Image (cartoon, rainbow over all chains, first blue to last red; front, side, top):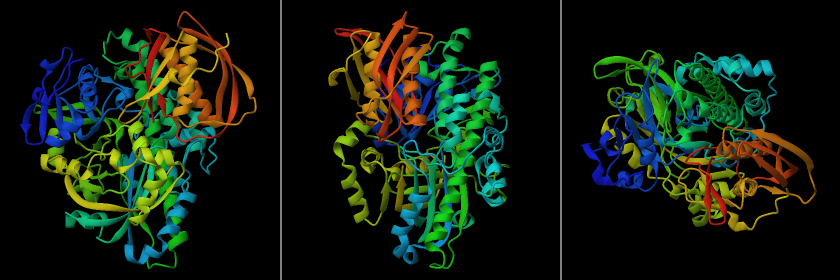
Length: 485
Length: 141
């Protein structure tokens, strides 16, 4: 391992830096980082860039490994990383997608003004906390049979629609309409199914949350109008994933791929990056299992949205003029997707690994609902508790530069250990409440780990992706109530 | 072989930006595995009562000792999540670095601060140290 310094980068543009393949033996493609000077310094503060260099050694990569400005150290592949491998024989790496397969964000807009909602915000936070099952080992209200779970695996959000948890507009405004093709429940272990059955419709713990926001500022009037976002009105973000179901699927395949890399004579600097060719039996089975977890996560966020709507109705029904919530979009930020991208003028089919990175397709993509097609795909970038979140659009630049990808959040900058030592959960809760942000959280140490000071400045992250041209600003949100597991 | 409860310095949390990293020591492989389990439960903030739990037997087989450690901690992770049970009074035997046989008391947990999503292979290497063996385990949380 070679120590990485600022002078090891070539500055390609004011917001794009490159480490060439000559930097370390084994690199198959360069690593490109989107950052300004300050965010570059932050990225040099942990092992995230070394992890990106390790990822650049995966077989079958095209162009370059991309690192977003919210990058931070993960467990093998950096969080905030994008890597595309060429079909058919390029590899898929479960660890480069992550344990929380299809962890993602959903945004709902409302007609409720902050001022009319203010007297009821505390009650709303309590209702959300009560209705959205969260925390360690907490199961949901659903009792899924084995057959039901298999249907969720195949149908994703469509299952939620059939069972009364969704409307047609929700489905249309979900990435891939909430259903990834190719899901095969027979590729999922009995233990994953055992963990998945009780957890559908639950938030979980960690950095997952439900957050009520107010639209703070609009940067693109036309796009904001199409999304139903108006300054001063409430919106809701839901951040969660595929729960123990996805965690077990990833664990199973990281284990299964340990001997597979030897069979395929693939040498890697970190065993967490284990992989298999996409056209191998192992690679195909993982993709079929990953699709099951992805569909489970789409259904999970859909059911959470149902709980959020119920909470709005319980708390605001009859008290404000219109308490309905309309889906703006739902997008994954941990996923492997088969997509076509232009590489050196040629249209190439690739598996885009996005781990802590959001798909950001530009205008004209046919899979977008009609109202967004000429604008580009909505991108949802949650901040940390107490700071802004952003709504962006994918651009032609993201299609040209970053395999239709952009950032996914603020990105951590402080370790969890230090955050717990620096911050007391109960004091943080009191401080946020004094700023008018209602907090409901089960674990005070957990809250401390997620303190805003542990994260980068999300505004700076968004500024970089906007200036680099891989996303366009639409609206900024600020939190008024946060529910954490 | 019965492994006694280790002193606290047998595991320590290291700095890690996004996840939890735990440096674990043990005089031999069984001790290292037990200490790793105890460290993982402490990181997760697991609290149990004093009552004895049901004695369970465990048997695992893996590719190598690192994989065996991941599998062992994964069994604990699943017990915590699915059954809300912690491990106590752990007795392990490890043969050839690839086979683990043992018993433990499965004790109901009273509370847990934060679950572990996964035990990872990230930079995982069991190495000799002045006191026996040492490894750093990164947990996805």
